[in-house]
Picture 1: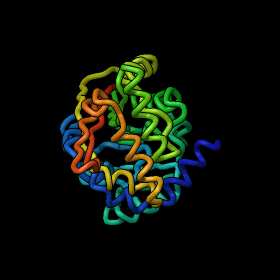
Picture 2: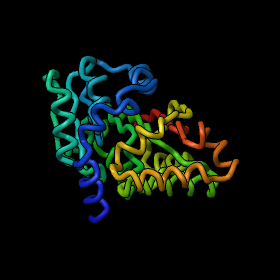
Picture 3: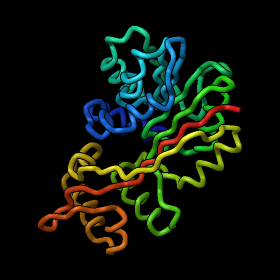
Picture 4: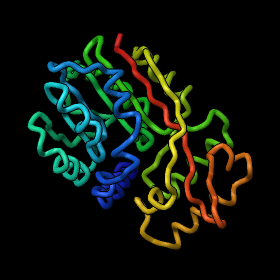
Length: 254
């Protein structure tokens, strides 16, 4: 419960920054999500851990209804305010690992750039499978770690230092195992490098300049192999941007 309180405190404090974040509001994954889902006007959609509400904003004009859910009430309020023009969007406070919905309630379930905050990803996947109709579609989009422990540990460490609510970015192999166990069959997948502007990324969760500098030094002090992996762009000893791995996957429920 302490872990989930950390999530609520962190995201409640910075909720509006996620609505306006360019990293979250834009991205090639949003139009790709629509292309993969091929949504219908009769579809009922669940957007888990909606954050700034960008998934719902993309899908609301194309489907019957969208339920946006989030563990953090201020975050959900910020998203609902952002989406107030859409009459088919409802907001529900919900834990991704204990969803307050009946079995087989939704035609599609989406979770975008959030699952690395969940302490029990296996429970999250089980809940997705439970509330998804048979033959329904699940799209997961999230930051993933390398299959190599050293690089994975470096990534999770600097994310945790920036955001104490970060739990763990899983490698793709672990996600695939969890999905298979819950009878979610992978139909499509895409792995890409996502470039993040360092200052915007670090400032989204940290106000203290000293703490931001600590993270900066940790990253620019990495060895060359790690810097190359994260495509760190450094100008005059300042980290301008870096890139992380983002995995997008479409599953259907057997």
